[in-house]
Image (cartoon, rainbow, N blue to C red; front, side, top):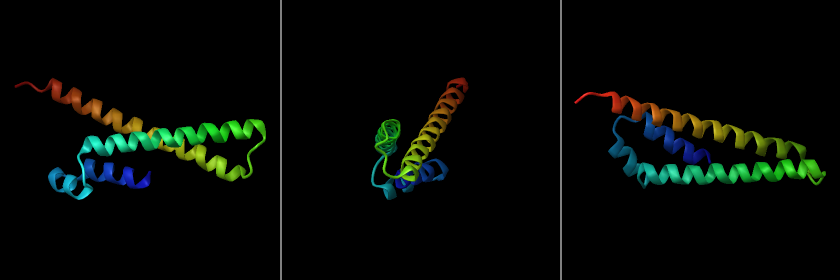
Length: 97
């Protein structure tokens, strides 16, 4: 997950996107798609950890808490990426030609 987030961050922060895309080995849509699938996996792991905690099947409470925190942070990150993309779209839509 961290690797995917690093790729997204480097794409967003790098002014020369062609070089960045070539280094990442794919285009932005692939990186975004992979990141979304990773966030989905983390959410599923979090749901399983919460279900295990509720049923008393959890073996390590710390690992369950870490899984839940990872899912929460990754969701917040994806929401921020979405918000930035929407703001960029709105800004482009407001631009007069």
